[in-house]
Length: 461
Image (cartoon, rainbow, N blue to C red; front, side, top):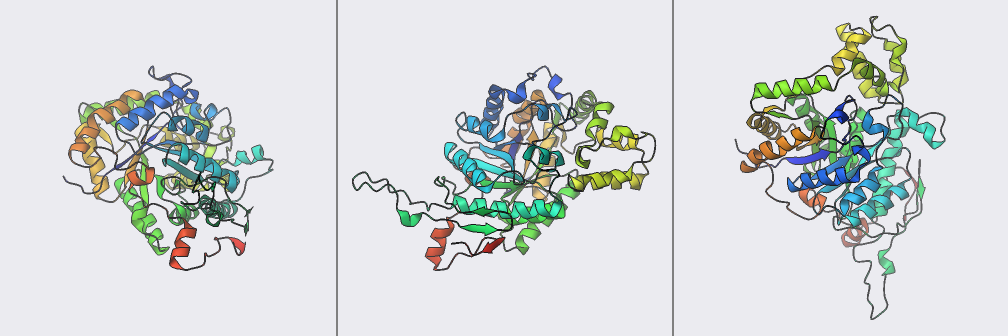
């Protein structure tokens, strides 16, 4: 098997266990406080960097209940954590989640620009719109934004942030000590944006990094989410339960991007995957099943089941009665796409609530389980078949992550499917994404006026 394209590699750092994994933290190799232990993060970021991973990814949300998974209950804030990793690593990309629903564009632009400079061009922003509806209560709101508002805000928010990142042209600072000229003021640009959701004067008080702008990722799967990703994202985080589903999503996103006039190759698609490596395919399936059974508990699954439904309490229902379809209404301002899929599954199969919870939490077969050779073959098949550009692998159980690094990656590296070494110094370099030229420099060179930002109610200056 031969491949010209190379597989991109992301490592998701959720050490004590994210959704559906209430007992990952019991692994004897994991400290119970790993999610707030900077030494743990540094250790695994360095392991991933030594294996030539493109990036580490820090997920986030800002609302919890006692039923939230262990990692969500007690974890470090992403930008603070990534800034620490920036000075403990040299090449690996540093991607963090920050919501557009409950942050102002100016602060987001400044914080990510700072991370980009601290890391010398390795920062990435995962754009989310906060599906946890309870987050509104932490930001002085009585109820969460509806879908249309969330995605309208997100679109305008990202465009404002990107414009702020271009406040200074790349040669704005002569720093000439002989002439005492620190700044060329003609290279500094005020934004003066007034839009439907945000009004931002600018300029941002920080220069651009080596990669021009941080890499933007997005992870929504609704129609609005896919449209947003095709519009603003350099990378897409997603979930692909099968090759066919992955290929369909891949084609859809690339098609939407092309329809917007973008080069589809300027978007990399990285589904999250579960990898289990054994001595044989049968051994791997036994490890997979044993691990999933050990990390499964019906009561905890039932308690956590309400999250996509706006943390609706399903404990109030008869477990053996038909699935309560009326609960879907609670998901309207939450993770509605996910909740709708769950409801449709239950209705189509005629499942009770108990059977629905069991169907979603019981052990399931991953396509990336088997011997090292089998896993390598399957990853290459998905890459060659345009079902993905790369993967995001959760560092759950450390022993399995080591087997992936030590046994699967050497096979893929020998085939040329993964890199021997980093191609460049920035995250854009290593993901094969283009440098983002400053919009003001480009407009002046092309002799054109800058168009107002999308969502602008008055022309930007």
